[in-house]
Length: 362
Ligand code: 13P
Figure 1 (cartoon, rainbow, N blue to C red):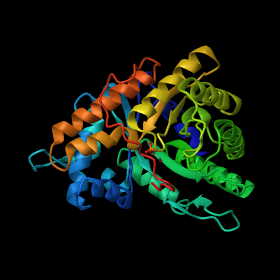
Figure 2: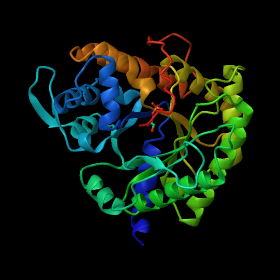
Figure 3: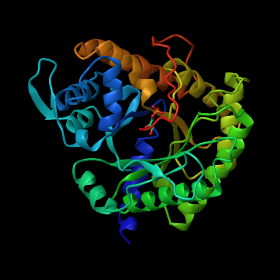
């Protein structure tokens, strides 16, 4: 079996991505999504601007102190960098590798409406040709992959059993497929913050979702030691009138995970899901503090997109690379500390805006 040839390498990659005090930079926004970010700073969504921005990320000094891996969009994996003064440079992926940051690649091809599902439910596409694409990404230096399945909680009965099963199965087929090509799968069953449900509801839905995901991974023979989980934190819906405190978020998240994620999984790297930069760090910190008191055999880190890049984009503003890098490093350091349960509120700067967008698509 092809997977057997990669077992040791997969476990080593997953362990490197689970280093204490680190997490991932999710910079895999699709061309449409990065366009929305650029629009917020009045910048054209051109290839040159995307190249310049991702070159900023890849050349940020000392990023590797808190960032073990970076998730890229396909364009970036094959794109050359550009220097601050506009000179052509080495491939962007090489700049990350030179820093000791492991490159990864988003391999899903987005979500589509789920026939037979409830309003707003989706399934995640991208299995066709995945094996060949994964081999090509590995040859270019990628060592891990990401696939984002999306579920929602709503008063009309979401998630339906159909949505839970379909998305779990898709994640498992993807994970098995990329492992056979040497890529560590990040398994991402996101539960959106949209809705007015309370934190206890999120916890029970998330236990069901994760249980179903790990059943599907088992049926597909996914090698857990060579895989990573990227879940949402266990939070109340964005419109829930009762706002849980940080301790509650920590306790609920650790309880949910301890009930449903096998101990063989080396790390759980949370998505930020629309939390503000500071809130994402504080919640991650609270989760690690709760874990220190309970059962948590995994590294509990981060794989943030918006909560690592929001200030960075704003300070860069299309031209000021050093200001963008300083903002990125500040949030990377904050989240590195939070991964150890050692982040003190407000000790790193941020633009403390809510990044929540209803029906967010990546
Ligand atoms: P956010 O941290 O912005 O939720 O994104 C992480 C990600 O990669 C979602 O797939």
